[in-house]
Image (cartoon, rainbow, N blue to C red; front, side, top):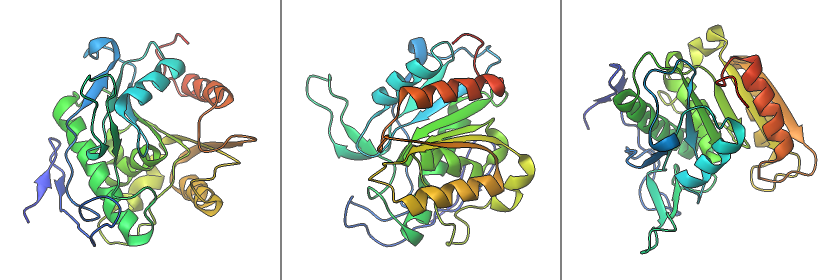
Length: 256
């Protein structure tokens, strides 16, 4: 299988694992991002504030992330991407965009997760390289699986991303060689990361949430918090903390 490369010239070697029993295909199968929704019908090529790159969770879609984005920073440009793996087709009347995923399982672990995290992150990074000007700052913002992908973008091409937001996300273990090639240089870049989750999360195990926070503390400039009474979801309190973090890091357009 031949190497792929994004528009910035980074070579990507497909790394494929075993066959999945949950979503058709193999963990690590090369993916392509094809669908997106943007703010105000497009994004302004000339704005200087960062563009948000929104990544949904398992069984969701790009429109739900667009709705969340409008609550967080409505005056910033954003692009919400659709996961390339289809769980349920869009309805015939087009009112329901369908359900999609980034990974070949709801919560893969171990080597399976390494392969899938790498494949999903490189698909997003290639989309960015092909569609976003290289001088435009980008802030990936993801929920759950999307949070995993958002962080993993730093593990393959950290120089391209201004900051990262992971809401109720988790992290790949990095056991498979080549699936997180930038880990060795990431800590020196001190990239701001906002990572939060609910104390009552019943989807991502607590040890995974704690391990993700510990890994981010070691490799990034981390702001983290957990929320009482919150399950695998988002909250207005969380959004308020996120908006303050955006201001502190000069990421929003200046109007909240």
